[in-house]
Length: 396
Image 1: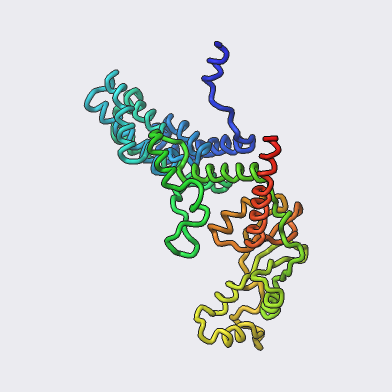
Image 2: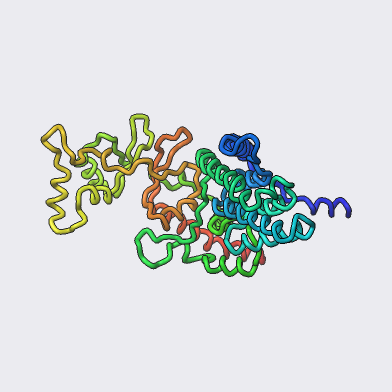
């Protein structure tokens, strides 16, 4: 019983990889080192150039860069506002137990009001009370000096390091699911399952501060739905449904030849490969329309003919080959990518063709919207037809 109770006091085991742990630790090291060096240089050796709450801020900035508590305004505003509150407590109440007890809760209230909740801010407010004569002598200037400078330097270091190591920071909130067709309809994946309004209602009912942004929480729930769907209906991979005998183009393929291939094979896109069959782009009918100035449908046949006709001059501003109009670095998938992962890309983001790569990153095939729809329909139809058989067997 005692062992079970003690175990319940521990947090859940972290799913964070060793690499991510090293990334966060190295970021905190670099952030604090750069902040210390610049603050020491700017404020001088005899000044207080680094405040203790920066250590706690480093944990949030480099371990939890997506947290609402670690965003730039939270860090800078939270620390500075809390410092000002602590200085006010010292000025009006003195540096005694009452000021120490009130500084942090008043700072929390101020951070809530200004939308800059930052846990180390509580330590900043308390530090203003118990920091000693040097801190008391500076008063508000301490919050607007070392605290502000250190906070800004830490945020700048976090911006550089997190983005260089693959973590988006600042982590901007992305509430809306924009429709690629610029209409008021919700994107297809938002028309079934839970709605954003459902999540908002649950969060209001939960009524606690979450250390995760709302858009990240929604993304995690959607990915959980995908995994549950895969487990229920079985995993279909891109390698199972892709087209393998695919018409492709090269960078130097003339536009007229690429257009002729698309018309002949009745396809709307050509993957663009280099000589070792790695995908370097994709060209679609919309690329021909855009670059050919075919937005105006009057005289389209004449305009398309002129666009595809090679220029007589050796130097021309008009595109001549596929590489000049293709979309570079297109979205790709792998042979073992579950088809369900392509549904949001195709339904919400407007991708119609996804090139598929093998284990050597070479082109292996292509998956279209038709392939995904056919695969999901076949799987659902098979499941529906098999269910009565299983039920009758179980009841027998």
